[in-house]
Image (cartoon, rainbow, N blue to C red; front, side, top):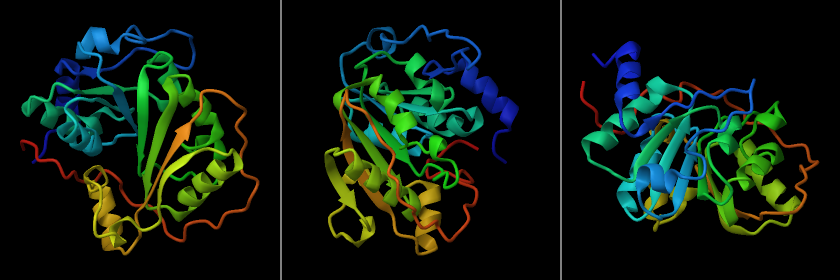
Length: 252
């Protein structure tokens, strides 16, 4: 049997690369590591990349393995989920990985202006009925630009045609520079290594015949951002447990 939640929470508190800031929406407290992640933890000046809504941290760990000269931080509020990636990265001795347990809405209290070079959004909930909760909405993009370097990148990998279309229209509406746009990732013979990382959730959708899509765009530091005023067809399927199992191997 796998580790129980209480045991995982105890591990998370003890892991040297897991951070759980005591900040909330009720106050304006800034996290102590804001603006100094390079000196206070990573001890180098390598670019920092975030995975927001990292779940079990499969993408965070996979990217860290591929790019040792970058630092990666997985962000999620669910500590028991992040335990898997935190445990694996610690056992593998990956020194360019950290995990941050907090709400994504509080991300600009945890990182300083220009401290982050890029953001990955891997299979976020499309939030088809709640624009302000979509992780590529203008509400969140405004938060991201407070922590990104000028011309920082946003990378979205999704099975949701709704979220893919919405994000494409938002990019077009605001005249943003789109670096990559792939409507059917696995129809290509030569997939970039970083895009070939598969989470358990992604494998489930592929088994159901859903196309995996990818967009990467540049987020400018200034300029008003507008929502696309277009009706988008909703996805015709319901989500299932996103974090049922992980592709990472852990000790049972």
